Image (cartoon, rainbow, N blue to C red; front, side, top):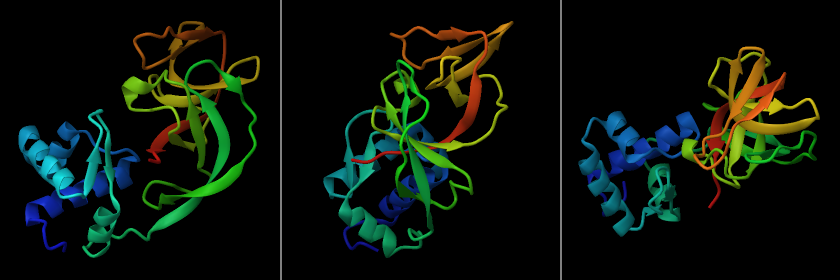
Amino acid sequence: MAANLTDRQLQILQAVYRFAQRRGIMPSVRQLAGDVGLSAPTVQQHLVALRRKGYLEIDGSPHGVRFTRIAREALESSTVDLADVVPVPVLGRIAAGRPLEALESPVDPLPVPAAMAQVGDFLLRVQGLSMVDDGILDGDFVLIRPQRDIDDGQIAVAVLPGGEATLKRVYRDGHRVRLQPANADMKPLFADEVEVRGRLVGLLRRY
């Protein structure tokens, strides 16, 4: 264990990592508090202490926590296994805004925790800000699990009749489909039909 961390601070650091491994996104303070059984103000104090000691960087957004190099060293020397990752192909971009061409050129795969990914999953790089209220930012990589059928309200890759693809929450409104952004400044898209290519199951963010 890092010499300048208390047991509780190491617990918080490990909890942040496990949440990110399980969900594919960094936790909010409230989510982290639920995981460790502490109040949100107490967790916030520990996060501030971890930032002050150089283990975390925090940008103030709901999921804006990231690990520093010494944090990874501390995790590697604790009981958290960082080696259990699998390469997942990156198939191109996906629009979180105006729809993009559905077919994109593949690029090199990225390592993803094995607990998150399964055979057949793929990554797409987000372009646009229509899903920011769901914590999905421009430049993020979304982990997609191929499937045609989804429940109303799930986030999915939807291909419009013109062949353009977008990442939105999908709802069936009578005889048409509503593609709902998670951005109060943007309006939903409507189509008579869409082709669902896959469901969002995780998110990766590079800093």
